[in-house]
Image: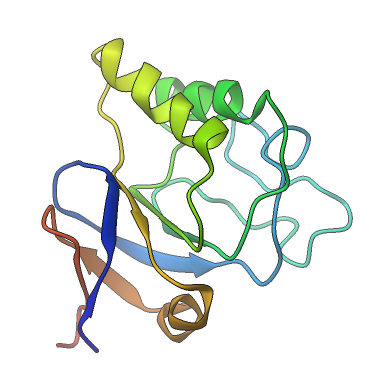
Length: 138
């Protein structure tokens, strides 16, 4: 399965297991910035960890603090290796911009429709710096 995603925040090639969330998430109060655990009691993927994954987000629940949580995840080494978003979330992406300005290794962020994200769930995914997304078996 070869897909092409729109690059929102460029980065290096990345690979990891795809954690495709089945519901939108708020990073503020939904993800523990120290561990990467999903802690929102109402989220279907509660208890899963986003660190080292290709995190596929079907949507986000807005909070002006989401960027700070993502920045903390990057700083703690608990961020995803790449983020796939159904729609750009400028607040969340700001966390990656700030992390890059701080000189920290920053995961790329790409736009990929939620309908295509679910097909990647649970598979090892390769995300190229050019926006190509493939599964390891390809």
